[in-house]
Image (cartoon, one colour):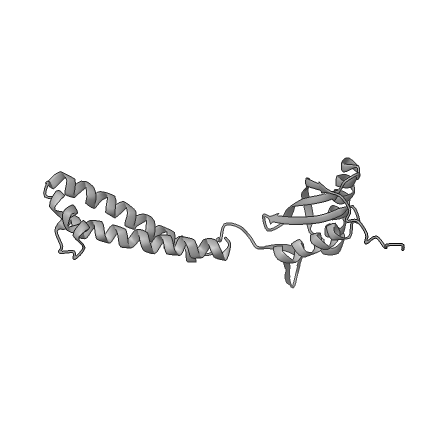
Length: 186
């Protein structure tokens, strides 16, 4: 999860919790200085409306608490490393970000690729790799994707010893080569 998403969820959770507490206080008749909330309290004299508001407020508070817990809990279901070597003396691992870096270097090395984004997923033993690329226009897409798939699979398996289950190359856009600066002849 991106840091901005975490911040937004944190802010949302705080506001949701505050709103839930305000609803409960309005439902049970605690004095609130705001005129708008005072009018709400007057409308909540009906017992069933008060119960309904309390139930809604408890749901909002539960959601806010759940979001706050999820915000700071590490995602333990998704491994962030892959086994490189198992031996009698122990195991060696490589992080997903290190593998992603290797894949990025391979894709960046292809002169037909203008821009790219790579994703590596693992189950702890093998990896699936996805590369989203912007190709130069005029490039034969099937040839490019086959080259990238082969280079990624061979390089990752040879460099790291990690088995690559699947390599997906998606051409998300094509771009013209930037024109070289033209010199003026006087």
